[in-house]
Image (cartoon, rainbow, N blue to C red):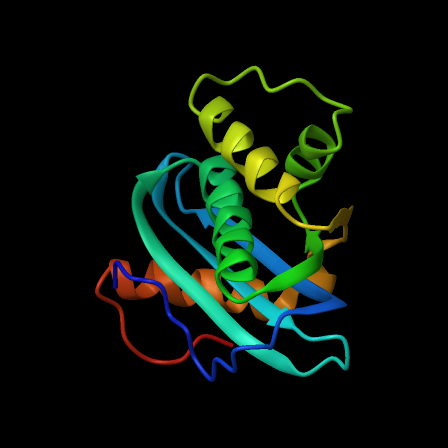
Amino acid sequence: MTGNLFENSVLPAATSEWFTAHCDGGSRGNPGPSGYGAVVEDARGQVVARLNRFLGIQTNNYAEYSGLLAVLEWALANGTKRLRVVSDSELMVKQMKGLYKVKSPGLLPLWQEARRMAGRLDGFEMRHTLRGGNKEADRLANEAMDKGAGKTGNRG
């Protein structure tokens, strides 16, 4: 699948409440077949969107940024004003917070776009979590990679 998956998407009214997005990206081989997954929740913790996409042959960090860009795009398209993003990519979180420089020429345009999009929101926060705190986003990323590789069936 090469398109975004907006499963059970409920479009929020423009709001100043904080939404939370868990995003994850992965690559099998790094670089290798890659994809991202993300789950967006409203202020009450209700899932309003599940996103995933197969990205072709890319690096893990490219996939992580692609997941971040997907949730930012969703937030802007749906009138979300404040967004908290949770990611298990310590590198991406620290780069977005300005704690690490972006040295990879392949990531620089993704970082620039993410910063630009985040700047259009009234509020934006990012935090790192361990892999266990991002289970559904990880599952969706793996589902995208499986679909891209032509695999079927459920992953546990």
